[in-house]
Image 1 (cartoon, protein in one colour):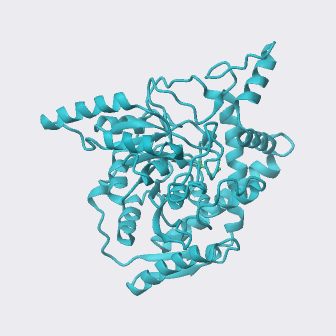
Image 2 (cartoon, helix red, strand yellow):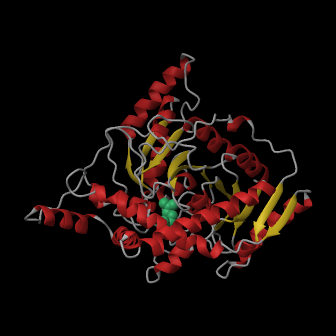
Image 3 (cartoon, protein in one colour):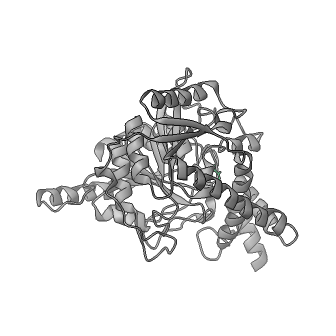
Length: 447
Ligand code: GLN
């Protein structure tokens, strides 16, 4: 605990943590020591973790890195977090992120930009940027993030750590602040697969507070990490041919595919003409869900309330005007638009249909192949401010990560070398729904 607290302090310029729970963490550590001495310690005894500022932790501030939740404290603890606490994890603090998890660079936080420890002029990725940097820069052993369209895998790739998004419905979302409920997943950052597997097996599984969680039994992922068979691997031709793909990222992915072939695995190129439709589908549906989810922040029930209003209507308007940042407002507007009476069928209904096509096409691939391998991101971490004038460019950074959320399958990003600029490159692997065991053991094999 002291080691991590010292590091958090020393590296405060990276802006990864919004708050540390130093006294509490020290106390938790003492309790854990005692339990170890008495031989009754939990499976995660002494593991020091950080949590993204979208996860409820009873009697602790929760702000989703937004001004609109100023002064708000959680009244209960997220199921996933509670299960870790039950196994004696030590929570060291709350981590910075893009406001309401909307973003790909961690530049959208009301608490300032987070910086990549590999090169602080560059972004760490987003939205779980603080959580990725915290693991990258040794400020905690494991972080919990959330992944709605890549927010764990993309920053993991940019920071050179492991980032897992499990299947939709594997981990309870109870106590995870909602962005787009049919996409949101709690995800895990770690330095290695073993830690991630262990944390997953403890958090996963049925929860009476979230009916979308599967009742499927949870394997002991951490005990089955050897991969000793021949895999059938597909890569989507369109991903490796996509226009904005950085040559060194392409090369790194190609090198992995070549390695797999040499090792006797089946590696095949498949067509995936739907690739171009994935991003628009994602941004239509997630903004629609976000506009609905974020309607609850009205100045009455949570956190911040504008003091400049003179009547009720103004209170709502002023609170939301002053409380939300630009990106969140943009998405609420977009979402309201695609849900409006005149455009609902043209956008929302249409996107739902396309989502089904993408899901069917992806599931079909998994009838033939064990894994899909692709780059996590088209580029390495860009400079802070690089996409300020062109948000579409920023959205394009999510091209490879959103498919797993649109479909609901598990996906992981693992480190795959560095580019000549010194920045990490990530490799992404996707597997069929609930095949986290295979996904993790295969990733272990690749690392
Ligand atoms: N970058 C994507 C977005 O802005 C993903 C965010 C996320 O996964 N939370 O929506």
